[in-house]
Amino acid sequence: MNENKLILKQLFKNMFYNLIAFTILFVAFGVIALSQVRVSLYLKLDDELKNAQKMMVNLIVNENLNFDSHVGIDDRKRKDNLIGFGGPRVIPLLRNKDGQVVNFGSVNNTYFEQYLKYITFNQGQLFRIIPITVQNRYYFRSLTIPVSTKDGKQLYLQLLINADSERALLSHISFIIFFSSGLFIVLSILASYLLSQKTMSPIRKAWYKQAEFVENVSHELRTPLTIIQNSLESLMISSKKKIMDQSETLALVYDETSRLSKLVTDMLTLARSGGMMTEITKDVFSLDHLIKIVSEPYIELAESQQKSFQLDLNCPTNIDADKSRIHQLLVILFDNALKYTNPHDSITIQSRLKDNKISLIVSDTGIGISDEAINKIFDRFYREDRARALNRSGTGLGLSIASWIVQRHGGTIKVRHNEPKGTIFTIKIPI
Image 1: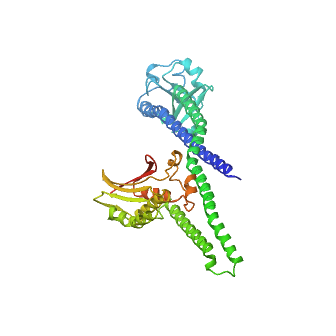
Image 2 (image 1 turned 45 degrees about the vertical axis):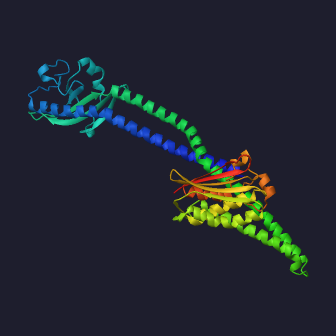
């Protein structure tokens, strides 16, 4: 399975997990919202039933009402019926011990005959508010309690309240919630895909960078190893020759071994730079003084190569930084300037203090870099073609390490063209 398939597989795996998470959230939201709406809608109805219960019980127990089975059905008398008690929405039904209706209120006989007479009665559901459906069209909330009159009659009081409007509203809200949840789930497919793409972007970038890193490392390691191997084979074939006769071969092996050692050291530094393995130990020191010390061998080397190496140091204050890493930064920049300049070229090192930042400027009149290379110069293993032709000993890691050192100190490093030719590196680090 190639890398594209692996990345694609992980992409859809992340998308699936995101979709599951979105779905759970939307469903949970819908269930909670619907349950809260339902409770809110029916809570007022249930409170009305409970308040009516208190009023009706007091009426039945304490008032001298006639609860003959015929009264309130065919020829109700106002003083003997239950009209007007318990609230305008509550419909009371008074039943005898057998469950037959002996009185009712709040509605006329026609309403009773058409609807209320079909309401069921269950003695096992006393003191509970239950939903009741009439003719599969009308919905009521019902509360039934036992009561006793003054003369000792045992009756049942069933209180009803119509819930058609609440049920219709609940159905409408339910439709909106479920439709919205379904729509959001569909949209979450797209959101999951986009989120997975965004999540996978740094992973994909890291994958390709890792693959590029391994490829570059393999290439860089192969060259010195091949040279060392061929040189050693040559020495083995000419084993009877004296060491003096093989001095050139041995020098080549030494040079390639040194280059290989430096390459491994640089790679280890960059590998550690990705995390917190390499700590920055700060100390207060003079940058100008450090530049003078580091530049001494480079000044002598520049003279031997007929190059000008000049210092223009104007930083009167100290810097709080890792001295060993700043030393490494200077070596990289000075070494880079010497490598890519020709005889009679000049190299200038400047230091300045401005806006609580120390500026280090390394300029040269060497071969310069192309516009394309300016955007890639700090990438690992990047070396411009003309730089490779001029100096094969470079690894393309030095400026990557320099960039990391500057970033760890909270600074910036930039490169630009020097007119009429050459390159200018500008480093700014807070003091």
